[in-house]
Length: 116
Image (cartoon, rainbow, N blue to C red; front, side, top):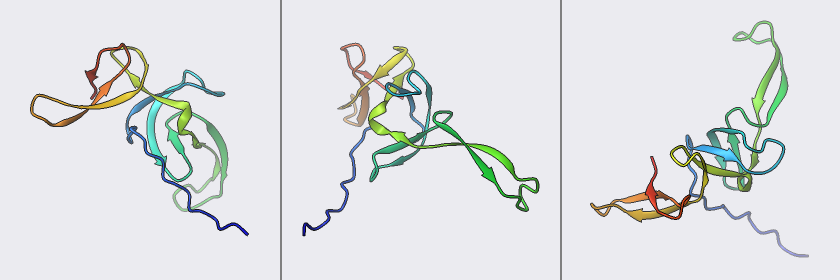
């Protein structure tokens, strides 16, 4: 019997609050901010993307209960950093500025330009 391996954590250059564009799947071309990243399951939750209806019971905070829409995770491979200046998705590279401080760079147009 083969032993189960622990799932590997995925490295990603995306961070929470980055604006991303969905590049594949049902929500292709949708944009939003990253709310959460799950590195074990290779998933991200993007604001306004992959909404599902959930039925909430009445609570003290929400006495009526009812239907609420919740963002569900999508595969991290289906999102790409959105470069607002280039107006398209881009990969992210790392480099150093004049003060030798590490910065993230856009690879969108062939030239590397600082993000953020």
